Image (cartoon, rainbow, N blue to C red; front, side, top):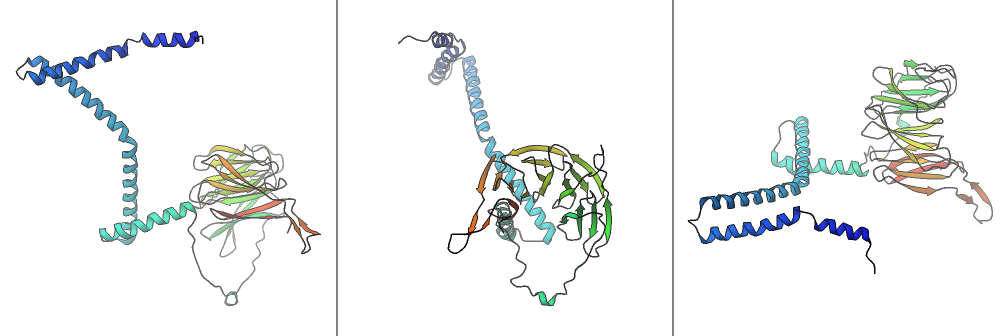
Length: 359
């Protein structure tokens, strides 16, 4: 078989390399010097210094290689120590004086298990096994303030305030205990340019879990971020090409997920006021979205009859097909046919529920 001249020339160039043969010639010289040093103790001091210099150079190269190999392991150990020191500091602030042995044995182990359960979505807060509604004086309050129909409501995690949005483009901040109006973000006329707020129907609201930000989106294709404490507009995002249908803040961080009728999901870093990335996959308008603590979200695709679980880190998605037909007991007559998946909510990291027009 004829040899390809390209590979033949490559081998020829490799043999003409002057660096590697030079290194091979130096190795016997070092060995020879070492043998001379072992046989003649009273030899020339220059030879001894030459040998020591070469030996120290080799040992320094080996130690530098070992340091480079141990860098990743040392980094993990350092981060683990810093994490444990943070846990000890927080525990000391919470309980004051403590016994070091008890802390190492109980508190740190409990904290590590709690963090792992939160990450995996296994942590639940049990409030009561039973609830007696008869002992509660349930009342209905009416909060009036919008000019048109109310389209979205968001309650802060602290339970002290809530927001309502309307087709008139306005957002009202309410006191959750007294039901008094605290602040109003007015809406603008449709088609107005560079307006601070919404100029069309608002379709969704979301409050960050730390209570700093309120996000709103609507038919004007704009996501507005508002300050909860200062009652002012912070920034607006205009990258979506159609109406914003759903918003959700990731638990434990200010990462925002937005779903749109343009069939895309976008990720935002609200702290940095920055766009992160876009998720593609739905074949029709996205109707709802939800998320919890992990870097994942679930969404429904309306008329494409799918629910999707998005794994952000793995850059992958799981597709769940809807469109179920519910028949009667005999199996001959269709009672309900699911033509659209309209809403979704995440129970924990491994379970979510969807609802559609099939009843």
